[in-house]
Length: 74
Image (cartoon, rainbow, N blue to C red; front, side, top):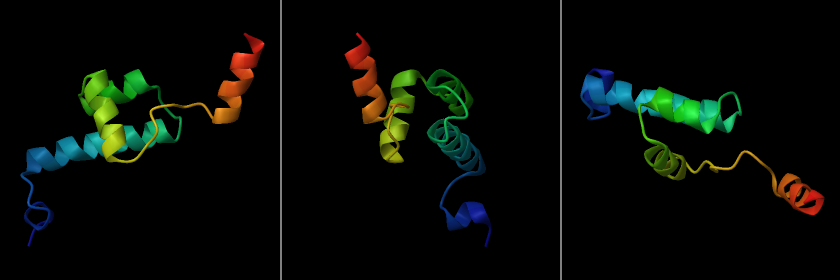
């Protein structure tokens, strides 16, 4: 049994999903920007946001404390 049949995905669908998963993970690790991640994934920014939600990754690369600090500085 091949990996593709085990996942019930065609090889091209598997490759596409792997690109999205890699881009989401690299974004989550703050290795790349959201724009670059969307480009790597081959998605528009709105579609990349949907992928982030699907993978349960925050679209924000700032902590609540950092955001509060930024707001207080004005």
